[in-house]
Length: 106
Image 1 (cartoon, rainbow, N blue to C red):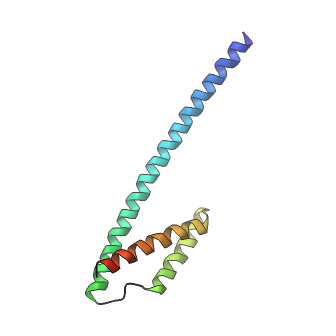
Image 2: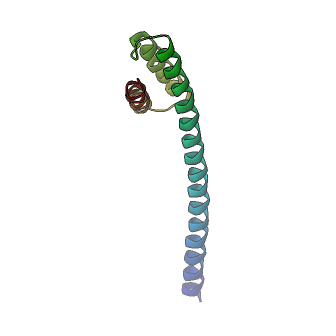
């Protein structure tokens, strides 16, 4: 009987683990949606920046602004205990994508 109890216990453990894993995956899925929503919001604002730059004949690239964005990204990464290099890589990609869109819209 001890063997049956052990087997039942391990089945319950797997079931509990699977439920916990499913809940965590759902939380990640929700966070991923929020990340995409924030990227969409950022892209919308960046398009507005591009429009203003176009209307006032301001150059697409603003290195001091890019440096400020990267510095903030690094500071925020440290504040939240996230790898600064990873966060900066994501922001570099966002900046480059915005610059490409700005160039194409000119």
